[in-house]
Length: 78
Image (tube, rainbow, N blue to C red; front, side, top):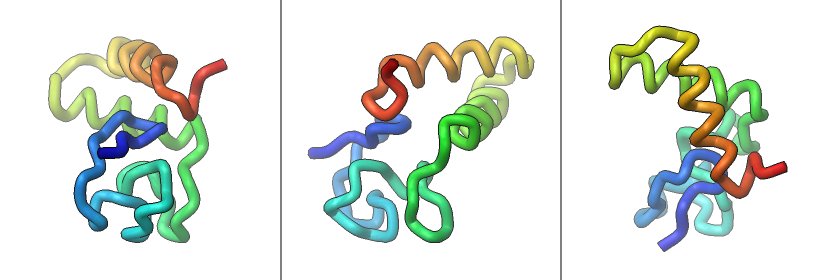
């Protein structure tokens, strides 16, 4: 089973992959409408919003948590 290189989501089924393409290393949530992977800034924003929505923390804390999570993922390693 592959994991998304941008958010870490397990990708088990074709519909989990960007554009349903099993060759992609990122998931449908990390893809732009044209199938390319979101930029760091785009992913940081969407992940921060997801954290705010699901955990109810403020924007600054969510942004910090998102940056910390992303630093551990292959797409965003320095």
